[in-house]
Image (cartoon, rainbow, N blue to C red; front, side, top):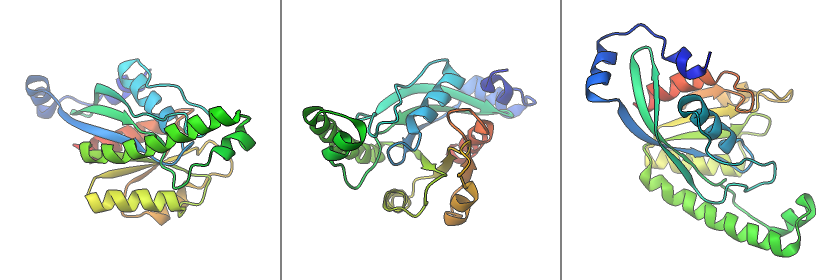
Amino acid sequence: MPIGQKLKSGKPGILSWLNSVFGKEQAKIGIYGPPNAGKTTLANRIVRDWAGDVMGAASEVPHETRRARRKANIQMSHNGSGLTLDIVDTPGIATKIDFEDFVENHEMHEGEAKDRAKEATEGVVEAIRWLDDVDGIILVMDATTDPFNQVNVTILGNLEARRLPVVIAANKIDLPDSSPATLKNAFPQHPVVPISAITGYNVEQLYETMISTFK
């Protein structure tokens, strides 16, 4: 059974009746995080589960997403509580983007690598600008890495300064060296949901947390 159907199967009540008459609440949600944390993979899963569509291509090469992409009117519901989302998949946030990394580690020609690095840098600026136009954040963190890296701490500090509601998706728990408990201990001030965006493991809990947090 599709996840959308499973989460919609709660007992109807007065709230679901009101939603059907007056429409669901709506929020614009940005998906943020460092490169290769799984942002686009998660965006694709959300859009596919609730709208039967996809957001865009994902890749193991860093900065595959270099322009923000948006899907509007993604309707979620659970136990009579509904939420309509605009999902914004943003470029990966990085404190340093070096074209030589693409040449040495991803077998790109120098010209291609320089173009990608330039576009990736512009993408970081665009992602930061989007913070002025979103209502909440899904912050995707790689559960196999140290949570206290510079990018995670910088992003989270920025979001907290803006007082944006944040749900942390502790991604890649399908990998043997993942430690979602480390993320929960590191950032107890925010809801942390362990997931595997690529397999779909535990995304139901993420969707429930999104609805309760972003309403």
